Amino acid sequence: MPESTASAARILAIHAHPDDVEFQCAGTLALLAGAGCPIVVATMTPGDCGSVERDAEAIAAVRRAEARAAAALIGADYTCLEFRDLAIFEDDESRRRVVEALRRARPDIVLTAPPVDYLCDHEATSRLVRDACFAATLPNYKTRQWEPAPPLAKIPHLYYMDAIEGIDRDGRPQPAGFLVDVSKVFDLKRRMLACHASQRDWLLKQHGIDEYLEAQARWGAHRGAEIGVAQAEAFRQYLGHPYPTDNRLLASIGQDGKGQHLQAPSLTSGPSPVPPLR
Image (tube, rainbow, N blue to C red; front, side, top):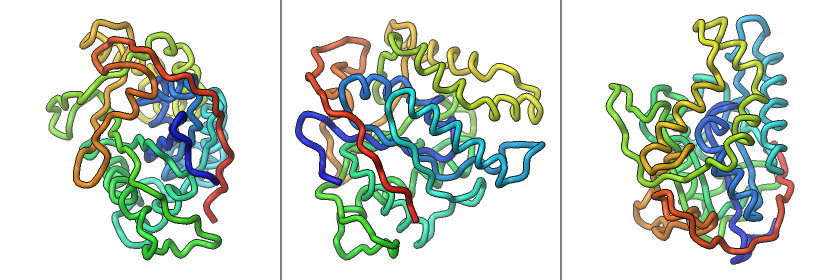
C-alpha cells in the first residue's frame, strides 16, 4: 500500500473496544472523511465480554459486524487486532502486533485512547500505540507476522482522544489540548454509535443504563460549550521527542481548535483497503 500524498492524510483511529471510537472521535473522523482522507478504524478487541446472554465468540462476531457497519457510514475500513477484553498488556508480543497494524494502515495521523482513563484496556492501548508509532519506523524491529508490511517512512502525528467524561481515575478534569467542532456531522456521529446496538443492550442489563446515545450527545455538548459550538470533541497531541509537533489534524479539517473554521484544503482521495492481521 503506498504512503499518503501531501494532499490527503491517511488516518488510523485505534481504541480498545468497538464503540469507543464512535463515542470519542467519530465526528472528527466524519470531517476527515469529508476532506478526502482515507480512514482505518481499528479496535484492539472485538468486545468479547460485552454480553450477559451470548458467549464470548458469539458476541465478538456481533460486535465486529457492528463496528464494520459504523465505519462504513464514513467510507472507512475496519480491522480488529484480536486481543481480548481485559487482556491487553504491555509486552513484547503485543507491541509487535500493534506495530504491524500501523505498518499495514500506513497512517499519517493516529488517534488513540488517552493515557489516563477509567479502564485498564484503554490505558494499555494508549501506551502500546504511542510506542508503536515510533517502533513502526525502525527496519530492524521485526513484527514476526506472516507477510509483514514494510516500516513506515516517518513517525505519524499522534493524538489522544478524550477520556470518558473528561476525567481521570480520581474524577479530576482532564483539560483538552484543543477541540474540534463536529456540530455539522453530529447526526452522522450519532448514527455510527447507533450501529452498536448490542452494547446498548448490554449496558442496560449490566448497569441499568439506557442512555447510550444521550450520553454521547451530552458530553459532546459539554465540550462544545467550551468553544461556543453545539457539539465538539477534545484531543491532546502527543509532543514527545521525536514525534511531529505541527497540528496536521486541524490543518486537514480546516479548524483552529477553538471553534473557528478556516479554509480546508481540497482533498479528493478515498479509502483504501487494509489487509487483516494474520
